[in-house]
Image (cartoon, rainbow, N blue to C red; front, side, top):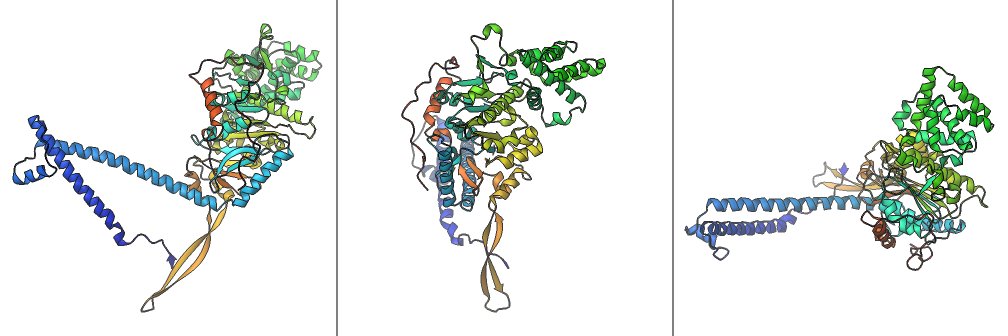
Amino acid sequence: MSPLKARGPGRNSSGPALALAGIGALLLLIGGSYVALVGAQWWATGTWEAVGPFTPLFGLATGDWHWTTAATVIVLLELAVVAGIALVAVRGVWQSWRAGVSKKSSNDAAHRMTTRRDQVALQAAAERTAQRLSIDTAEPGIRMGRSVTTGQRVYAPWEYLHLTIAGPGRHKSVAQVIPAILSAPGACVASSNKNDIVTLTRLARSYKGNTWVFDPQQIAEEPATWWWNPLRQIRTLSDAEELMSTLVDAGKDAEAKARSDGFFDPKGQQLLSWCLLAAALDGQQMTNVYLWLADSQNSEPDEILRAHGATVAATGLETMRRLPDKTRESIFATAEIFVRWLTNDQITRWVTCRPEELATRREFRPDEFVLSTDTIYLLSRKGVGSAAPLTTALSAAILTTADRTSEKIPGGRLNPPLLAALDEVANTCRWSQLPDLYTHYRSKGIIVMAWLQSWAQGVDTFGEFGMKTLWDAAACKTYGGGSSDTDGLLKKVSELVGQWEAPQTTRNRDSRSFVGSQSTSETTRLEDILSVADLAALPERRMVVMMHGIRPMIIEAEPYWETDQGAIVDESKRLYGAQAAPVIPQVPAAAPPVPPGPPGPPFPMEKQL
């Protein structure tokens, strides 16, 4: 008994194709010989004689024409050209066939996942959420793309927090990050290691409020016309320890954390916390913290702490200074390394302000920002001179402030919600507490969207347990392809998508019968709807979306240029792109410009499925 295989075409089905191939080869032979013989004659005599298409061949038979070396050279050149054209054509057909097979496979899988009814229910849930939360927007949620099965746009409800894992070149920025920033109804935090999010969204966001660009590494070449004071958030030692922890964690990768010293690292962190508290209580700036750490004999922070009633911390600092020289210097050196970026004037320019500049440089205040419709762009890159500790600290300060502010608002949530679109989160927001806060933020009107290139990148940033926590807490998970993690991410996604009962037809033949008889039977067997191999080969622009309360679905990524957002993005690119004239940022703007055209229609944007 063996599975019944699909029948192929009959034996005679290739006849017409072979006949056409033979005719083509004959014509190619005649044409090639004609060109070779006539070309050789022209080469020998310098004159071109127009003759009939069969004259040279008949001439060879009668002896009137002769095959020469020049004719052979011409034929070889012809063969090279024909072979090149054939190779390009075959490659194109092969790639087209593979892409078609891959897309067809994902299309088939999509029909085995969510039903039309599921997608109608999701749309209705998004609309109910928007109405329940009184979110005044033209759309009922965040655009995810278009359903492969129905072609309708899919929305994630406004209170869902997101995690997307997709490799490079998988349309994350153009189909998810940028549309999310453009649609944010309230304050928006946008982070990236590239300046494209600034260039492409700044104009649209300026219609809603002020735009702040935090660019310590000069990725977007933005001048430091404003500054942020990290010490303003510190009132107690716990606040100082929280900032210290954020700065230290963001400056270490998984390997560096594994090498941490069990004595000097904790002592250095404690010392840094005390110095941060002293600087905050005395109204000093971040650079003073580094100066204190660089001089283990400077007792100024001890005196400040004692003067403000922090006697235990002051005593701890004094005790640390009385340690043996080698031990004391090692502790101070460890703390100094944690904030070594404070020696970079290009970076510290963004977190300090000279007294004479206070009247002209505005200070960014997270407590004001979270209640506004402003946008802040946080730019940093991994590597030497990275500003990731600062962008992480600023992200954490904004989200923490938003959380505390929501508790003072009737209903306990921000309205409109704050949206944090954290692209390249492993480079821009290495906040170890983020996974634990994902579930908490959902009820606070804080929408966090995080993008990673791989599961391993998340483990490097948040640790194995933190990455699992983040994955489990995200109400909207998206896999965008480009991964080869067969034992980790792809297996998780395959299991979430589930299995289906694949029909199987078998044929039985009775070998004892003289005439031969056969019977067929229909059975089913469980197969993965999307195997690990299918997910590894997911076509471009295809994404697997897994939301709470609905079966996973496959969507087609929808780049901004294919939507109604294309015009405003193109205009923003023209104004703020690399070839545009420099635009002097206005913070705050005197008055927001008037958006072009009338506002969009109220949701739902799509007709009911």
